[in-house]
Image 1 (cartoon, rainbow, N blue to C red):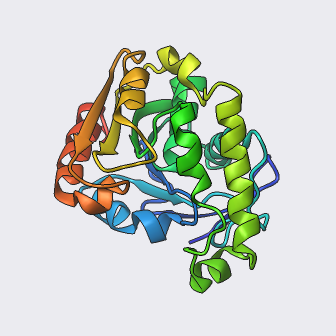
Image 2 (image 1 turned 90 degrees about the vertical axis):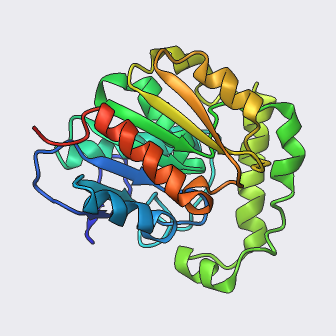
Length: 255
């Protein structure tokens, strides 16, 4: 479980199930207050057992990745995408399958739309690539962060939950105020197969906004699940089935 310094100035913690393999890897990226292992560990292990090269990447400021504390500038999604692409460069990975959850899902959508030649397929769980004004109140309810545990504070290296959640809410509000376009205007550039996976009870990601995004992607589709935000946890078997078919159809195995 090494750490890797990259050109953007971050030092990222990751797990690689088959380092040195020439197989196109599946890179998994977690969401807010997570790590690759903590939020996506069972998916990583399952994909590796199914024969894929799996890389779990922890974003800057979370877990063992640096710098700390995690902050949220206006362009934090783009910064995380830049980190992802620089990470791939540092490992000599030209092309990858991307799977992201929540904030990590927004990151993989940006990567697939900004560098389409580098993404073989994309799965975004609990992410929609665009925000509407109806989400302002939903985001604001994350503040002051009294739902964050002491263990999570220690793991991610901060002590003030209100400061952490306040910074995230301000960034999300600024996205809405600027029109809510995370990468919707670039969605047509996504050339790989894309699945957006949403739970029917996910308050952060309305179905209508997911539909708006995939309608602009030539090979995009939306899959709805009878669960909440964490589809990969709450509807695990259905998630496994769809993800496996998606990756195999996209050439997820080495020749």
